[in-house]
Length: 332
Length: 240
Ligand code: HEM
Ligand code: FES
Image 1 (tube, each protein chain N blue to C red):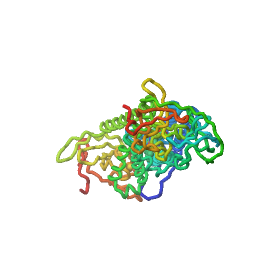
Image 2 (tube, rainbow over the protein chains, first blue to last red):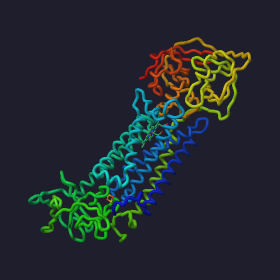
Image 3 (cartoon, rainbow over the protein chains, first blue to last red):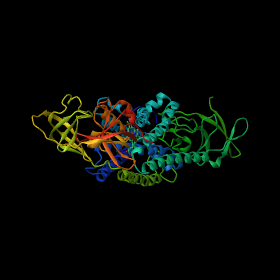
Image 4 (tube, protein in one colour):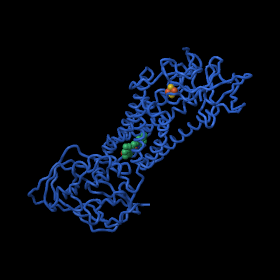
């Protein structure tokens, strides 16, 4: 794999993924708007643009929860990783849903008047919490993320920056929760909206904590051997074609790989989007990233030709059935 | 590539069976949850209340009243007069106080309140005899909401509350008559056009209270058939 910048690298899985996602979005909106129209009929009907605006709002927040669940779910049970494969398209489709929500709000609530529609919406809070502004700020963050989600930006912005930027999704999520809590929720009677919002926060928090604990368990507890080398584990503790991850303060995480009995070590951080290589598998002689399938030769850390990706490698010694690791990367 | 036991999922390779099994379970569950959620939300949303905006235009004759906001005094009761979009009709009717006119437009109606979105108007040469109700002012203290009459009477449903706040402020800024709807401590319904002393529209200082729970104190009366609450800016405050 490499970064040849085609607009989108399509394949069959991605197409199915996108079609299923779109169908799900249409299904949700149809049922939401349809049920709303059946439940509230003239003369007490809800204005169709408002129903649609709310529908896109709810659809967005649901999609946001799904997007944020996929990462930890795949950590907890790798069978969820097919959902991860095309998460980027899911993110872009989510952005369009959120955008349409904001667009309908600005057009319908902000339009037809004496001032510019956007400023009519954003300058309306007076004394209260400016919940519209919170939604707008979240949307801006989602826009930057969607616009820079392509590998082109990943390569040009640098890995760390890109990753940090994508961590902003948690800030944006917080803004969205506040947006609903101080906006729409204030108008709803009953406990349904607060309960659902709380459920979402608890669900995501719980998933992230569970995934973190599970990862910590799978990681190797580090014990210093001699002269800076680390005693990793027994050879037999690394399943064939798999890896174990060594994490040490101040160092990048290292994947210790068992390729048909040959133990080697390389960076745990995929050169593509930083996927966890140690959770991957050796396929056709290469450690294969569980996120999008970039591959690396366990001995050299290089992607097989014609690809040019490369990750750092580390020295390994096997002594008396134990795997020893030098945590300083090869070549300095 | 073997499809057996513990092969991981790689996007460009055939999908191992155990992944497919999970997806066959997860995707329908998500779809079902989405349908369930939209049904729950649709059936727990608050009703916007009964309000009608007639699709067809109608004509109404009456006497124009400029204050507190332009309305038509008719034998059928008062009709607030508003322009298309989020604009009041102060400019259109300047200087016509007391004139007999006929307006054409679409009727908005809720709880006995009416407004007309104007398509046009003409002066008429008729002696109109309208015996509107009048009622002396009584002091009232009530808790409720400042609404923009056009949306609340049917232009937008729902046309109240915090969700609708930005739209209501825009309407009021454009001169749509503000309406107060609320209750006294004794539980008595109070509804009246909100007239602010020395102001021919809702002043900007009160925009921040639109869509919030507020308390008003002032005299309420019926003038030429129209229920009016008269207050100063200071007599409108956030309710606690
Ligand atoms: C320009 C940006 C945005 C603006 C101006 C905006 C404004 C609004 C307004 C006015 C409402 C109340 C609608 C009504 O009930 O009539 C609302 C509701 C809502 N918004 Fe936003 N919003 C924005 C962005 C977002 C984003 C990015 C999300 C989520 C990702 C979001 C999620 C929601 C949700 C879930 C509701 C509640 C819908 C309901 O149940 O009624 N909004 N928003
Ligand atoms: S992060 Fe995309 S393949 Fe590793």
